[in-house]
Length: 123
Length: 123
DNA sequence: TCAATATCTCAAGTATCATTGAAATATGGA
DNA sequence: TCCATATTTCAATGATACTTGAGATATTGA
Image (cartoon, rainbow over all chains, first blue to last red; front, side, top):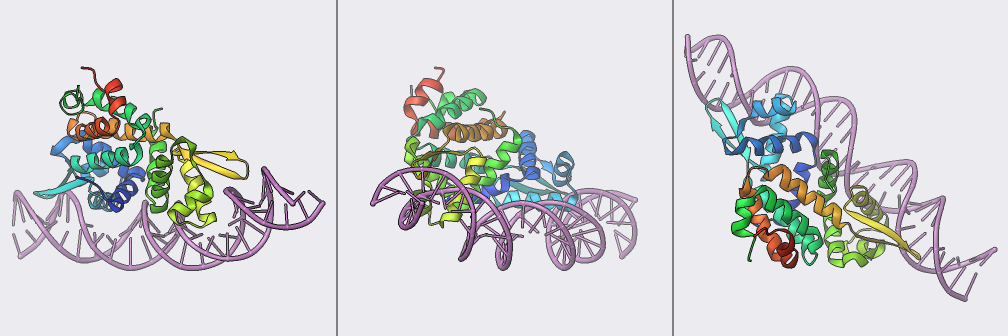
């Protein structure tokens, strides 16, 4: 997935709010199983309508996704969307300037060791 | 450099505005030589006071830096700040989930080939 | 069907942010 | 010193965004 400028703007806007940034962190840690809207709200200290507002915002921005599961709406991180945002930053803000990306690539090697070995290394 | 949550929020907020996002792209392409405030404003179609407002915002957020050069204030990309933001995203949103970082790492390998070879590959 | 649970939607109020134009500041050259 | 250039600061306006609480919708089980 490759982000347009307007999609990147939406994604940055979504992450520029404390409650929403925390929601994303909570949901990434929760993995693909996800968490119900209520559970996310509790985790970040938001009211039910506040949680709904911010979760919708994040979903519109393509950073999380939702599915109904009985009475609950279960939200989970959208890995593609998050990855696309990181790629946007790297392509846009790195292009021609390895000083920016190199340390980030090191983080990737660290936190995603097996994947990094498969995909990032041409050596 | 390791970003605190509040610094990441500032950085995301700074990048969530069309004029500012374009300014960052222009300044990254300009490299460390940078561009005067007026040149950046012209490049993105902002008024002089508008350019000043947005450039200050980006500087406060740690994404660009400035120096006076005769009559001009020259702005340039802050590679450390941009890199720290990418790292924040990777650490926070990747941790335990290589699906997110791996494609990004591939971009790093692409756009920062020499650096990636030095720093990202443990093989 | 009724009640309970989970979530969403809506409207009102408040706060934050972006834009505009005018005025202030800093610099360099005549 | 005086003027022109480059940029910033300030105040006013309009636009967006966040929060809150009340009410609406959807789902399940009795």
